Amino acid sequence: QVQLVESGGGLVQTGGSLRLSCAASGRTFSRYTMGWFRQAPGKEREFVAGISWSGRSTYYTDSVKGRFTISRDNAKNTVYLQMNSLKPEDTAIYYCAADVDSTHQVMGVAMSFTARYDFWGQGTQVTVSS
Image (cartoon, rainbow, N blue to C red; front, side):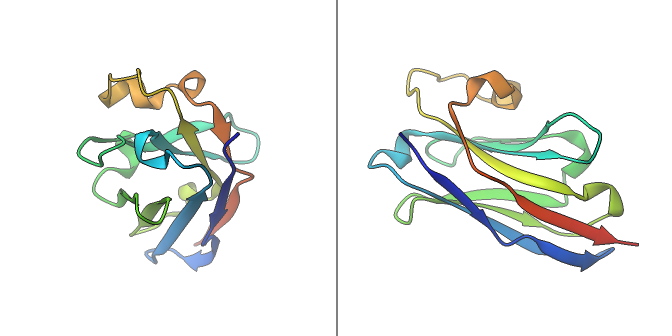
């Protein structure tokens, strides 16, 4: 069982920045592919960014490219999402997710599939005011 706890959400003005953190339990965090997803009111959960176990491979949805950066610190069992130039349409609950199957070697767009992930956090609210 892996527990994921997100933090860092809040209220920010358009153009502002936030850094989300996701702390994970488990002794083999360094083997997990990690992802960030978000869900806005009345909408389906959507992929935001993913990162491979080593951190060498990342993938982003088009709407956040150039504004968001995903990173990880395996020594701290933590994955981050740095969000810059925030827009009102970024308002959502943000969730981190863990794919604990180390046989999943395909990265890129494959990191965007919800079904790939085995464990999910409770989410943290991000609100961007206009």
